[in-house]
Every structure is written in structure tokens, then in C-alpha cells.
Length: 484
Ligand SMILES: [Zn+2]
Image (cartoon, rainbow, N blue to C red; front, side, top):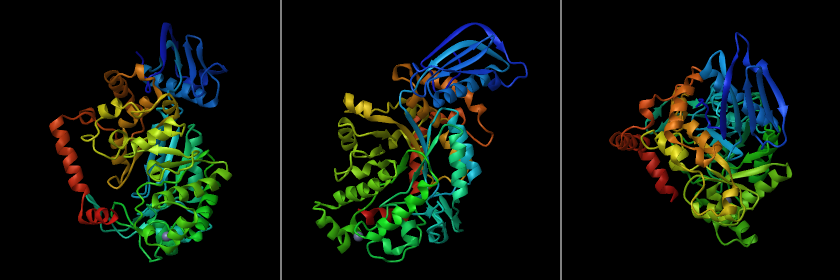
């Protein structure tokens, strides 16, 4: 068996080898067009005479080259004669990096993107804003980066730093990332989190909250009551300006509008929110959340974008049908119901795909063992799952070293479950192939050593408990209780 991750649909070896000598293998590839091959799929043929990569689209050709790169890595200067026929189970295979809690410089972001692209991830969800920092330059609104990109200190339990932390990506840097990703057949999905997790936006524009009170950037993790006022016209004006600006940078088809963890305490006592709720004939604040998301989504739709929202936006059960829902936690029944009626779904199950939790809590085997099709999905529901995404949140991650340790090899498990047909998935086989391929990654990717992948149960309990004890501090508890 060849070492290829994700595992292809079929691999047929034949006699003979291709001698590369000192030649660059990419120069030996002949591209062929074959419209019978599935989107993103390919047929890679290596024979003593050369290499042919057939596909029906550019993505397929790129994926054939990724497979060839892996075969070359394991084979050295003699490639085996082989035919690999392959196409993905799901069209969407993404990874998300939170650059708000801790800022990741452009060159380090590129290291993560390049490593993910080797395993055929095709979407990079860029979490650019949250309560602890605004990271996207919006030239039309300079106050955002001026007032909301540097916080005074950081208190995330185990990560405590009394010194300021911050940074933002200029328009040119964001365009550079888009280009870097495009070269790797990856679409960048920007996320502006709203109406909750928007303290950085409110720090720059206090008039966008319900009470208009000035606030600073948050220095702890948690869920906060300071959310955008849904009944204030100015909120939409600024949000649309931000979207307008970012649509000039991000040319992909998707845009993420957040929508997670938005406590409605302020909305309940805000005359403007209550008046909009009445005017729209809505029953409660969760429906108002749905209406808020629908208004922003409609603006994006007019710009030709497809919109994604976290599954929390389903609470009011009035979310527009066209919005793709990203399932992460709770409300599985609502996500299932929506998918069964044709609503598109991305699966990012917290217990299996959240890369920021320790291996003790989410061992590699657990990630791999998760079939990303939620229980209760019928035939329509199953076809509504567009794919998988592995988020890495960064309250507890402030270096590329730590991030790459947490993500590799767990990214490979998500990549394989998103690509490979269910019947071909086998954990031991996956582990053996992964072990051989991890050394091909850039030296700055400090992947986890094998002994950490599936640690013993007693160590798991210890590691998980100590993670949560370290993650919790007085401020977190106060914020949590306050938001209920
Ligand atoms: Zn309000």
C-alpha cells in the first residue's frame, strides 16, 4: 500500500518503475482532460514512461499533484507504476484558525495553510474578529484597527500575560493570503462574528451596543453580554461597510457571519431592539437573532455571496433557508431537522473536531472514529452535508509551535474523514500512513509525537482535568454566570 492521506478510492500497482534521476517530478506530468471524472477527483497514472494526471477540473489536477507529491516523498527517486483513481466524499473540507484571541503573523499562517493543503483541505475559514481583538484592516473605518486591535493584557487561565497583545492584517496582507491560498486551491472564508463576540467592534464604536456604554477589548475568554444592538440602523450601516470592504479582498463564494454564543440579556431591555421585534411581529429575541442574520445575509447575497452561520442562529427557527449552517455543539436536533429539509450543513463537532482541546480529551482515534454525518439525518439530510471543518481556537494557543502540535496529525484525520469513503476508513492503516507522511511537512510544523496521539485512559483523565482547571479563572466563571 502506498502512503497517501487521505486514502484514495483505488490504488492499482503494476510492474515497472519510473526513474526520476535528478529531474523535478512535476515537470514529468502530462495533464489530461476527462469529463467523466467527478469534481475535484482525478486519475493519476505513473508508468516507466511518465506521469499522466487526468481530471475534469483544476481542483482535480491539483489534487493529483498532491497525491504524486506524497508518493514521491515515500518513494525517493524511483516511483512505482501505479494508477490512483480518486474523488472526495464531501466537496467541503475546511480548517479554521482563530486569529483574534492570539494573533498569528502572516508567515506563520502560511506555514499552517501550506501544511493543510498537502492533505487536500480546500477551505480556510479565517476567524478575524472576536471580543479580544479586531484583526482585519478596514480602510474606510480606521478606528477599528486603531482602537480594537491591541488589548492591554491576556488572562486565559493557563495563558496569562500582563503585557499588551495585538496585531492586524493589512488589506495587502489579506490579499496576499488569498493569493497564497488560491495557488493551493484553497478558498478563504472570512468571518466577522456578530451579533455576539463583537466586543472589539463595540470597543471601536460604542454606539453599536444597546446601552452605548464605552467598553474595552476583553482580556479573558468567555461569553459576554455586550453584543451588537439589532434595533439600531447604525449597526447595519457599519456592518455593511465592513462587508463591502472585505468583499473587495476576499473573492471566494462564502462569507461567514458568526452567530454563536450571543446572550440576549441586553436586547430584552433595549427599547430599539424591542421596537424592531414588535415591528417585525417576532415572538422573542431568538427570532430577532434570526432576523438580524437574515438581514446581513440578504446584503451578502446581493453581492453574490453564500453565507455561513454557526448553528446557534437556528434557535429562533426563522433562519433563511439559503444560509449554510455550521454545526458545532448543542441544537443537533435543529441542525438535523434543517438538513433533512435541504438546508446545507458543515460539520464541526466540538467533541471530535475542536483542535484546541488536549489529545487527552480528543485523541487521534476519537477524531478519526467520528463519522461526520449526524444521527437522525435521512437521505436528504445526508446529501445536505457539504463537508467537515476543524476549528482551532486560540485562547490557549499563542505560538505556531503549539498550534501545529495540536493540529498535526489530528488535521489529517479530519481530512481523511472528509475525503475518503466511509467503507475505506481504517484507523490502524491511517495511523501507519500518517506516520510516514508527517516528516514531509515544513520544519516549523512541530507535529505531536506518536506517544501523544492516543494516550492511556488514566492519563487522558489527568490531562483533560488539568486543562479545564487551568482554563478556568474567576473572570471566566463570572462572565459565564453573568451571561446566563
Ligand atoms: Zn438593542
